[in-house]
Length: 219
Image (cartoon, rainbow, N blue to C red; front, side, top):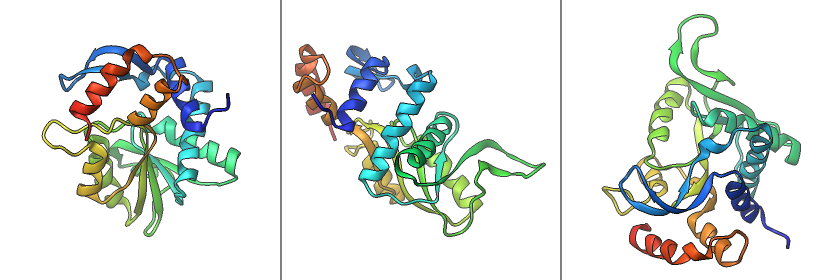
């Protein structure tokens, strides 16, 4: 069976122990039938594959940028891997940069390591998942303080399409409403459910719980 890159990514997450099915209590207090733990990525091979999936998402959505921004800390290896994949797979050379937790006041100084940003530069923010939009809220002031850049989008691995605790909007929709930034995901929870339905990954015994959770908390 030939899989799409989205289906391959879901299989990859399951094989890596990043996507698991069962019963999990989330930080929000909700009881979810699936859990995503990106901390289980830990090898060079996994990182190389991750970069390819992010690059495929960027290509599919026709995003054009000069620089990839990886918010510290999880976004750092993701932005590097994606920049490498864009060059190796699509012959697109892009810069990358990541923020310091504190501005450096000696040497080259600045808020970012890597490409020093300039006015008019187009950037894509690379992150693992978006739960509350915290990473976006932290990185945007640093970008604005460095240069008048244009954020053409943010790319994450999974969109849970789940409403927040205080709003019926998802974190992705909140980002669009609050900051005017489009967030693109390699896959969504709907893609994951479809992958189970189609036998791309095991887990049909969890489908009823997945449907119920999606109906209850879906944005």
